[in-house]
Image 1 (tube, helix red, strand yellow):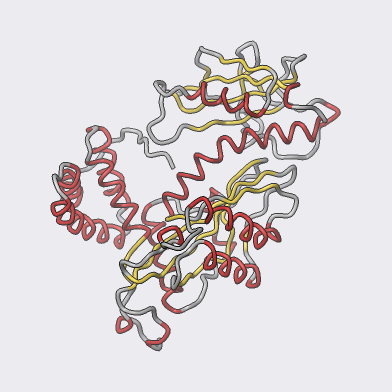
Image 2: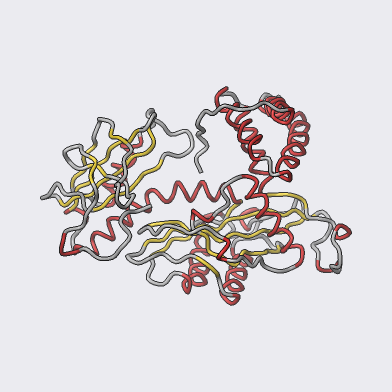
Length: 405
């Protein structure tokens, strides 16, 4: 979930001006007491815009502050994310025809969380509705191994692909609100698959389990906040990967998968984006090894930067060492503040050497950000520095997804 923003013309409004003023105040705050003052006022303004669905004002303010290159941009971005994914629970008196016993106690906070997983398969990676039995098993494992004692959960009964996640701050807040209502009523959120977008098929991709956690204000939310032995993040992740992996197994037939640490929504999305890049490289090498019955050291990898107006991403083309034909490819997307000044090729090369690739080429010249006119797949660099379509050898062609996400 990259925070780099493209410049665009913005229309100033009173809400826009007030967001800029409050964000600058928070960004230049000198103490925690001043922080609290600006945060409270900024939170109220953002909540108002989210409730009105005014995405344009939020993004316009972020664009303006990003161009100004000061501390206010990060202050505003963090506060918008916080207000999308966490809020106080609605008081029982505010609901109609619902017994008070159905609600969490007063002083409860609701936090939207995300439990991502990475997967790859020679077949289509599943997504879609989760049965009641599997959902109940997942809740048990989350409460036992990830969340602190006393935290109550409401889950969405759907395994999301990246294309099906909320695409804006307002949509994220709306989903958090729907899940929050379910948490207050002690039930899970039932989603209609027909209302969610179609998604493309990739060899390696991310899936997301979303939910809301209800926790007493000020109390521990995650297991690693508790003082018990064995509650460190690494141990929490290990237990979730073991037990949660078993609970998710019915949803992922024919897939290799790796569960990531469940966290608050936006943090988990960013960590999944970052983890998916090395995972895709490893998955690609495993896929080629299984398809062609070869070892990693029999492969060559070609790394090249791809540009539009600016550096957009790196792409890695794979060939056999005795051939210049690109047989597969991986896109390495830029994240956060990564740009031309970040030594990403060295990171990619280090990882490829760890995987055991026999030969690695780094291309210095810029390649255009091009895609196949027929199928839309990215074009990958070959050893001669040309962007080409990745094609498996003729005797290995099958009906498979054509590239790694």
